[in-house]
Image 1: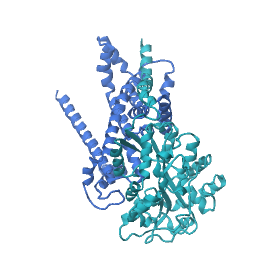
Image 2: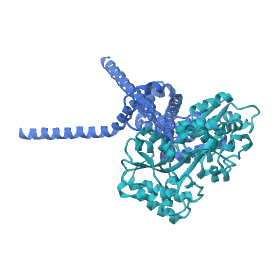
Image 3: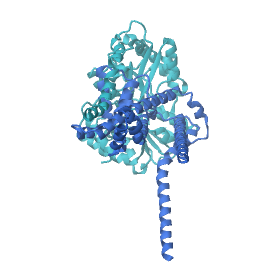
Image 4: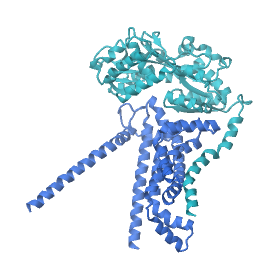
Length: 273
Length: 359
């Protein structure tokens, strides 16, 4: 009896410690975000210090064409980069995992090169290439730049998801009369779907966050949101940027809740069936 | 069969990359390379690469309506980044690029900028030639003093020279600008050397000075923020930023420009240059002439109270600009300029990195 309470007590202490640990980590992670959100209500032209509460920045935000245009530009690039990276990444991951060929090890290792090389080096190299072949800077050049680092991440992520014995299922599928395309769509793809989805999220995040590559490869007419925000650094970032970021965070949280709700609903349905 | 497929799949992503890289080239090149150096008819767009928050929106809008064109402003986050982009060949995307004195010599030597036809910029005659370091290749826009400002209520000492910044009582009190070529000259002057020194031993000594200075620094950048919210009591900053901070403090402004006695302060200019291969030169010249017009620049100074090399514009500027407390100091002539230090730049950068990494 005494022993049991001792164990219980120890468990309780560990539980409290675990909670403290979690609180500490989450505090470090989210305090900057909370501060950023609070300052979106700051009644001042630049976010020097707190001077009063206002919601005017949320209204003014939509009148700030530079900010809205660059946000739209960033989103279009991120979506395209995600689609390209996921398609190329899935094909590449399957090829590199499932099939045997000469130099496989070497090519597998080479995937990490664009991840390891400092981004600015890749960016300047790409810029020199584009300028020499006469490729005009703009959305195309930024997109290619983003793909150079999104694709390797997508390949690595998806490759980790492909199980070693997946061949059995595919062979069974083809034994039962499915052709390669049917097998890919009905068997292979669903089995690696979680990997494909995380590769998509990762690519989207990397692309929409990117500063270095976009800064070097953007043309004269448009630029991405992170580059615009960085260039504001000289004079001070205005609260409408905070307002925009707050809205972006709320949208992401809403999407997450929605996706969880959809998943839960689907699970319920499949359990009922 | 498997082997063939494997090859196809594995090379798919490599090929996709190549295809992306090469695919659009012919279509995209055509309009770019075919555009003649001097367009027969007036251009309808002007691409400018410059600092953000550095020119009046109203002024740009007026220029657009007067010339029936679109001005595309894109913004740099750092001078060095802009130079990298320009020297890698990205300059041809723009018609005008903003740069500073320190890079001019290299840019001209490398053939990255066009020589300007000054007959197309008649208003440039308003610019004081004392401030015009590369009169053939650039039009100076606005300038910045880099000087010391402090809060006379919270700063424990009176600062009259750079060496005062090392005073132990200022620990964690200084907000300073950043950049190798902004910080090292100050240390070099404090030590009695040429601010544009190319001697390694002197730069090394300056590094030692900056290490001590670093102990007193609370923040790099955002001086006006740190001064107004009380994080710092002293700032090494640009006069324009000091002016904003002083205006922000209102009636009871406790910020003063440090009364320097002997040490020279840095005066730097942001200037417009025309990158080699610029496509809309006609509009670029019109724009340069436009910003040199006294009335236009005077209006711009109201919004951006930096130091202006255009004497006629200063004369036409409003009272608020001419009586700005941030320009109330008596050593305006005791200045030095950032010069191109050539290969010594790598020495500066090495020591600067050492300073930043902390060993």
